[in-house]
Length: 85
Image (cartoon, helix red, strand yellow):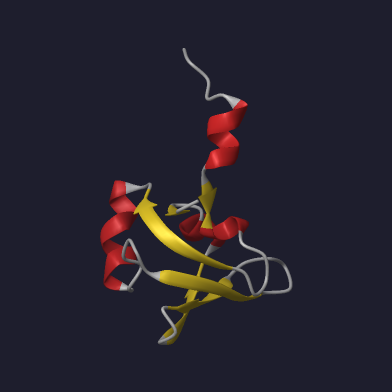
């Protein structure tokens, strides 16, 4: 059984790793079952997202998607949206 190296773990960031006000560009979607739902909500590779806020207990989070609208997601959903470096 192979384990990911430290370099590969730190190289991949997801939307859940963004800090408030930080912007990232979507690279890909990690979970094929969740991908269709996220694509329908506008989480398309190449789209810029900015973390707007977090609920007091951390979930859900709100994203500003491509300067167009605000989207609310569970942290588990945000963890499947990978960002470009």
